[in-house]
Length: 337
Image (cartoon, rainbow, N blue to C red; front, side, top):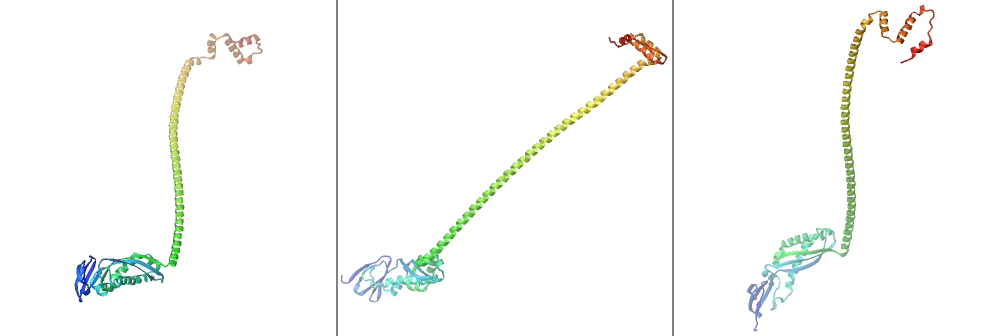
């Protein structure tokens, strides 16, 4: 009404109110009345904003790649940005008269692309596709140090690279090479597993053989121990037999000594008896033959006397001319009582 308007902004909008070539109001979250025909109002959003980007670059080995990501920025010097770009609104806060507010995001993307190109030119394709985080950190550091960023009055908060992709043909070639590598690794894993299985089987066989050797060694030790025990028992039995034999030998020696002593005693007794007999017969031996015969005849039997007579005749056979002995006499002499 009568050209008087009311403007109310939020806390993320920096308002600059120009009237007649001078600044009347400036700041964030302002609300005021203004005379529209004589006023120019620039509203600069100072809140953080996300800008997606995607662009193509060349790696160090001359392979085309596509870099896709997103950056987050905020305006730190709204008056500087308003002096570089036209943020004049047409009554409404988000209704700009020109497309200059969209140019700021593109300028930031251009700075990011320049820094990313420098990084990609230092890396081959395989390394570049696996270095998203490293590339993002280095690009963010390079952009923050770029004087052009400070001249824009903007601060980049974060930079994220979502993907670094080669062309479909190159990707298929890389996939084929990776597939071959994986197949080779699988074959190598199978080979290693088989080798491990063979090695494990060999260890099992060695353990079994070692077990058998240990068992045989134990059996041999048992046999040796048993043989030693049998030998010890045999030695003990031999010692016992030797002790018994020694006892028997001693007994036999004692018996021998006993027999010798007994024989000597018997001999001594016989000598005594013989001496006694000899001593008893000595008076008879001192008698002459006729006297002994006479004594024998006194107590002799008739046959003994006939025998002595025949003996006497035999001694004087030379003096006998003829001798006749009747059969009755011989029969009588041969008869036994």
